Amino acid sequence: MSVRLGTNPIAWSNDDLRALGGATPLETCLAEARHAGFTGIELGHKFPRAAGPLKAILSQHDIALVSGWYSSELLVRDAAAELEAIRPHLDLLKAMGCSVLIFAETSNAIHGDQSKPLSARPKLAAGDWAEFGKRVTQVADAVAAEADARLPSPYGHGG
Image (cartoon, rainbow, N blue to C red; front, side):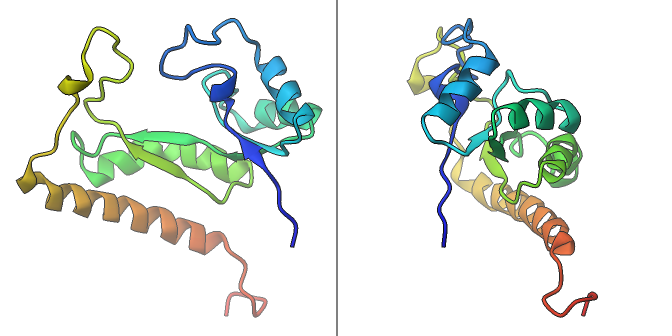
């Protein structure tokens, strides 16, 4: 069994507070990640969002795409709207050969607003957890079904 190590570009430039590492070019991030021994990397805000250009820049550094963070908003939209919103991200991950989706709920998040104290973070009321869980499950089931449909059958031709 071989082990491959991937990293996140947040060590070079931050997605939430873009001034942190804002001047660091994507080329520097990829070159240094590969030099450090990483063979994979997660998406960051400086990466192209089209498979062709993304494959080209990653192949220049002999590094693969591991996955990419997706910020869901299931507290403010239903599962159908979330699945529509996630479609470009899923299509990119699939085109890049990724088998992992990094999914995080970020509705009403304040982490990128330095004027707000952490005590102002959103809190889910006790009565809202069931609906939220239902929506997460609906999205997870749809994504899993799509992933399962891509997997080759161990028996050859679909059976």
